[in-house]
Amino acid sequence: MMYERTIPRYLLICLTVLILALIAPVSAEGAGPRVVQPGETIEVGSELLVLDLVNLRNPDTSNPVTDLRRYKDDTRAKKIERVIGVPNDGYFKISDQALGGKYGRYFAYSEKDGLLEHSIIFSPAPAATPTPIETVTATETPTETGTPGVTTEATPTQTRAPLPGLIAVAAIGLCGLFLAAGRR
Image (cartoon, rainbow, N blue to C red; front, top):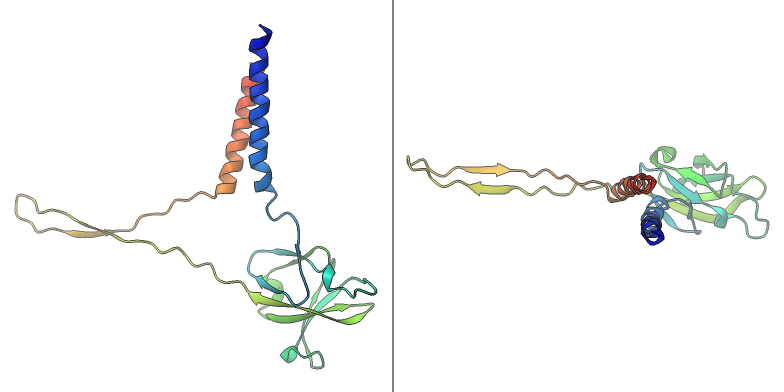
């Protein structure tokens, strides 16, 4: 009798651990900020990017970066074209709207240290190209009445569910099913 009750419990525990092992990597994608190195090129698109700009600090003083500045012709001696405020250099959010179409080299600036020698380059992210749609040509055979074959073109519709979301929904559903079965 005792043996019959422990098997479903162990099975439930094993399946729950397996489901959580599938959910954890999916939910952890993009959780932390991207660490930026001096001179790095960052592709900025419509999606919000979270950057860690700590490596752009002055290594001697380690004062935080407060601004990113773009200069005319990438020369620090010329006029400032754009200034982007950095409230937290360890967790800085940026998108193409913040840049306002002004891509290029941005120099780090600290209120305490002034203009820093480190810079990063913002470039536009490549536009997502839609997957080509294949056209299928089908030819009908002539009927007994003698009508010639008719050629038609059909475009197949693409139905794809995002895999990480599908895995998470399936895992949550299975957990609920096993919890309900365990209470019986």
